[in-house]
Length: 314
Image (cartoon, rainbow, N blue to C red; front, side):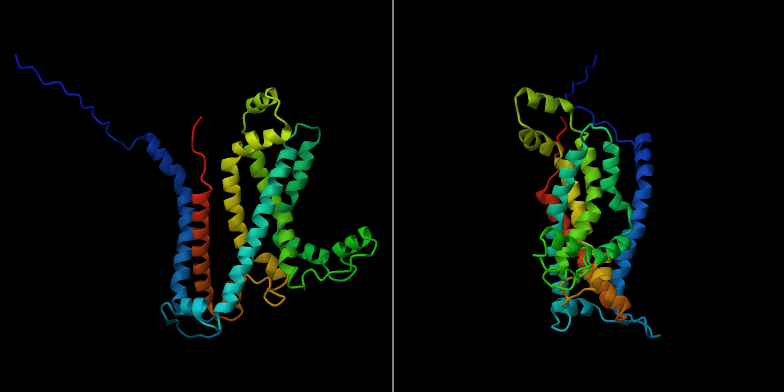
């Protein structure tokens, strides 16, 4: 009788493409197709256009120039200063909007997470600015920031100070214009972040707050040691999406200041659109867009590296 030698090796289960895999692929297919159609393909087209001189005001074929547009934008003294100034304005705007808007979103979400009568009305009220088109919001806030005494903000400040605060040229002063646009953008967008944070708050188990109360933790201690850790992944997403939204600043600048005064509010997107459709240089506008997209991707990857999500399953 022949005895087979025992084996201690476990057979690896064969990987089969079953129903679950097919369902996952089918569910993700629409998102992948939209991502390719509205992100990848336009980016490739912009990169190809950036390698050429394409003018909308002349019926002539494009001229291939390679990386010349990028050299002019980054290093040419005639073009690079306005690009770097626009990029600095973008980063300054993001540094103002992201922390302030995130903090306000958390504060409003905590406030509106209470079980009180009529709380649904207040949630709708704070979310309402998100529904309005940005063009409409910008026009309304342009009237609020009107530089004369009839402007709503100047009139309010004069009223509460009994005339001690003189009227300010909020959109005409280079030192105030970008800050004014940031204030308007925070007001218009904080409701979106608030809803996301509110959803994250409702995912925190109530038992954690009950345990903290038994340990006689104050409300502030509960916020620091229960609420913020429970919102970690939500806040990572909110910070990343707010950064992207703030860096793509265009509508407010175009309507409220047109990049002025003295280029104090001009942004990369504004310069790209101006180069393409005002100066009729599609190649330069496309090159600015490609550079800016790469910068946003780099900033997003750095943020993702620093603000790591907690993937631990409890």
